[in-house]
Length: 97
Image 1: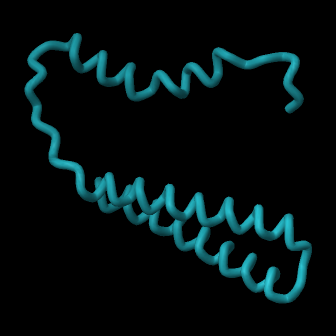
Image 2 (image 1 turned 90 degrees about the vertical axis):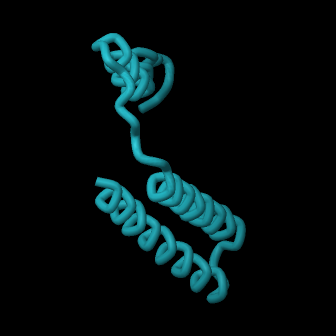
């Protein structure tokens, strides 16, 4: 399962790298400098984030099943998916979509 996660992140990292290279080429050709520098910074930050995530997935130790009851398993499951629930619960009406 780790190989699938890491390969997906590496694919996205390759796409971010290709976007960064394209932005550098546009910058060298003399495009809008401020916009392209900001786009390049975003692409580099995305590439670094994806590399860190792939490294953490690949290097984490294997899980040890020490939880004997259902309560600890439910806590882990809720803790994993709680951030996604919070995003949908805290929708503000005054923000533009």
